[in-house]
Length: 259
Image (cartoon, rainbow, N blue to C red; front, side):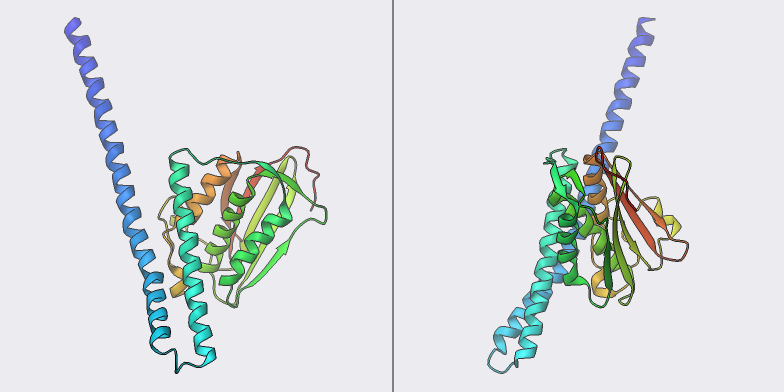
């Protein structure tokens, strides 16, 4: 009987070690995927910034104002994209290490939406973006900066995967003890096979328009982590009329219902 017990114990230890090794391999795979996609994604805007800057330097005397301004705008756009990318990465590593501190305070929902819309309007192109919100001021306990990041990520995602002429709506409403946020687009919707894993790291759909298509697919994964760290949930569904709705809610006590 003793030898049987010893054997069973040995089996258990072996199984545990195998599982630990498997998890370590998974983690390593994730890390190298991240590095690969990030290096690829970061190289594109950096090449563009370097190219524009060197062209500006070489042709400074001969360039007309319009061309100079256009090149500077390109540099600014790429630099701000890199900045977003880095802040997403930092948030991701913090969240995965369980270190992301949620600094909750009562935030005016309008302010958070305005900050996200202002940030995303740089990348709007010919998209139309509108906001639907309650007339009354809504106060919701949240980390304003992080929820702004969630909205920015959802807006960026909508901008990437819809045609330039399409419309995007940001909507917020109060439901019983919940603040519900929707980002709605009228794009092609999400293919069934992507829908299951859309909030996982590195999932990227086939993008609508070339340049805007870059992105490691980290945005949605980070949005999910931030919303869940607030005690809320995030989900996605296709609209019957075409397009997609990303919804998330945050808990907030005593909020009046509104339409």
